[in-house]
Structures are given as C-alpha cells and as structure tokens.
Image (cartoon, rainbow, N blue to C red; front, side, top):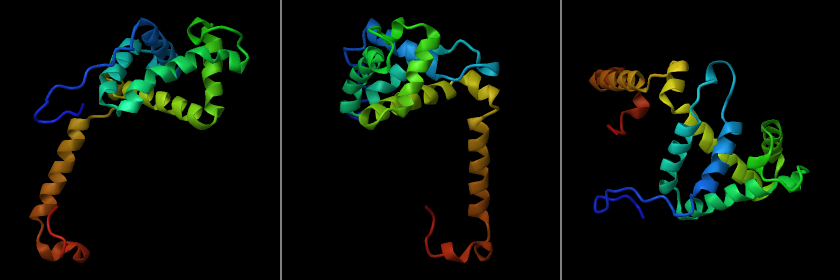
Amino acid sequence: MLRTPMNPSPPRLPFHYGRTTRAILRSAIAVLRPRGGEFDIDLDERVMRSILSFVPYMLPFARYGFPLGLWVIELSPVLYGYGFARMTRLEPSKRVGYLTQWEHAFGPFRTLYDGLRALVLMCFYQQPEILALLEIDWQARADELTGRRARLQRMAPELANPRNAGRGAR
C-alpha cells in the first residue's frame, strides 16, 4: 500500500516480525554497527526501532522477504562450520566471525548481507547523538545551500554561466 493523499497513513508492519525475528535483528545490529571509541553509545534498540519503522516503506517483496532473510542468517551457522547452533545462540566473538564470513558469500546471500548491513548503518548514522559526534548539522547545511541558491538567482545574467543561459530556472 502506497502512501498517497487519499491514504495518508503509512503501511503497517507485516505480521511476521515477532519476538524471534526481532531477536535475530537485535543480534545482527549488535555485530554490524560500529563500536569502539566515541561510538560506544547504547543505541541498539533505537536503531532496531528505526529499521522497523522503515520496513513498511520497502517494496512488498523486500518487506515480506526481509524476515525470511533474517531467518536464513539465523539458521546458517552450520554452513559456516559453527555447528548446529543458531546465530543468536553463538558467543559474541563467534557471532562476529560468522557474520564477517557473509561478506564473502555469493549471489542473493551476499545481497541479503549487504542490504542488512546497509540498513543497520543507515539507521545508526542517522541517530542524533551520532550526527552530533560527527559534527553534522543538516539544518545548517540546508540554510547554507538555500542562501547560495538565492544569491545565484539574484546574480546578474551577464555574470551567469553562458552554457546555462537557455535552460531557465529549475
């Protein structure tokens, strides 16, 4: 369901994001997000909520396939030599080793890992504390670019780039 003027509410989270699926996601977040130094802030739950708030906006095949992909990651340690254990039940050091082996997977398995990692990093780096640590101020940047655009629009036409003269305002 798309968000349109006729339907302003966002789509709902699919039903198969239960406790176990969330535990798998929580475990993956703990491994994939940056750690150490300034990044040792407890943001895992907020990152997970951010990911789950993004899921309803995914395309339907991704929205319904994401929990299936999480289960593939959960049940695959046996393929990587970790025995018949689930990822969430591995020791933290083994869990790190297991998920780093997914970087060398092939085909859709590599795509699954890359998508999960991108989603975790995107949601992690958008947290206000992390943006403050990195000294990123989106509002100041927007104000700067708006001011620059206003100056360019007030500029005398003879000072403008002649290649852009015939294009008009965009």
